[in-house]
Length: 204
Image (cartoon, rainbow, N blue to C red; front, top):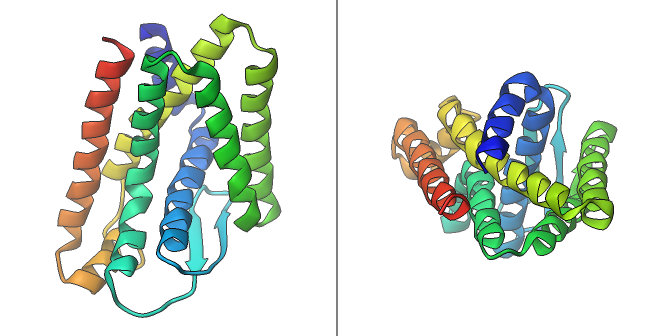
C-alpha cells in the first residue's frame, strides 16, 4: 500500500497530462450523472488537449438541480476514490476494476471530440486488460494505484480550482450568492475527508 501510494504521487508529478485527463473525465462524469439524475438531457461532455473539460446539458433555469450539477464536479473524483477504497478494503479487487471499466464505457455515450474518446477508450482498455489477464498482485497493485490517484488528485484538483465567473465555484456563486471561495473551500474539505477516510481503509 505504501508503494502504491508513493507510485501514485510520482505519477501525479511525472505524468500529470495523463492523470489530468483521467481526473477531468471523472470530474465531467460527475456533472453528467447529476444532470441525468435530476432529469436533464445531457448534450455532450468533452476533454480538451489541455485537460480542460466541459459538460453541456439543457438549462431549465435556477433551482437546486442546477446547484447540485455545478457542485459535484470537483467532489466526484475523491468520492470515487473513497468508494474504491471501500471495495479494496473488502477484498473486491475485480469488482473495483470492472466498475471502473463500466463507468468509463458509460461516458462514451456522451463523449465529444476524438481526443476525449481516445483517452476514455485507452483507460478502459488498460483497466480491462489488467482485470482479465493480470496476476493477482498486478490487479491489486493497479487497483490500489487507481484509488490513490483519485484520492490524491482529488485534493490537488480541488485546491487548484478557480473562482472565475465561468468556473464551478463561480457558477455556484451566481446561483446562490454564497462567495465562490467558500464553495472552493467546500470542495477541498470533501476531498480531504475522502483522502483521510480512504487512507484509513487502504492502510488499516
